[in-house]
Length: 187
Image (cartoon, rainbow, N blue to C red; front, side, top):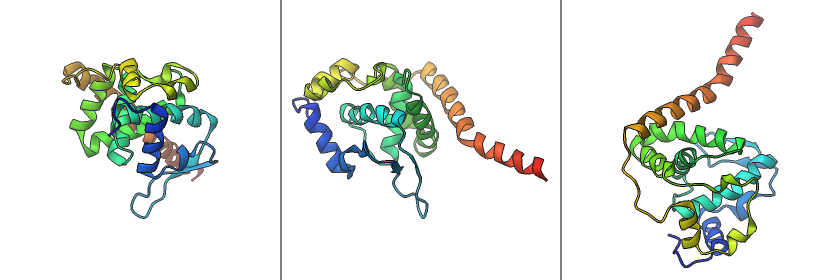
């Protein structure tokens, strides 16, 4: 989708246009995810999320994962596999995407996770180094270790994915359990 010779800045603009992302939403105060049936899921666009999503968007360009539900699950699995370093917002959002990704397509989630374990992310930096936007997509892919063949998942990948998936599930359901316990205590 994004040719190796294209500048990262141009590829990111193409990504925004393709997925209707209005400049990445970096200045918005609220993020609304694509509608899930009758539900609209939204949350505050915190400074931590904005720092992370600037890199996340470039990961979409480098990996060519889509920005639909399954593509977000794949990029989430890839980012968890490669590591989100000190970006707490990325860890949380990616773990949630990983949970539903494994449920939607365990094979695609596992492949993305294994690919991540063989790569690196831009999250190793605290903020996006704007000079990356002047690189070519090929240079970005090389710097992240995405220029080689996608590895075949092995037993370690399966075991680690299962552990991360379990952590993500706990993270996802913990607020509901705490809320239920609160109601029970109030009764």
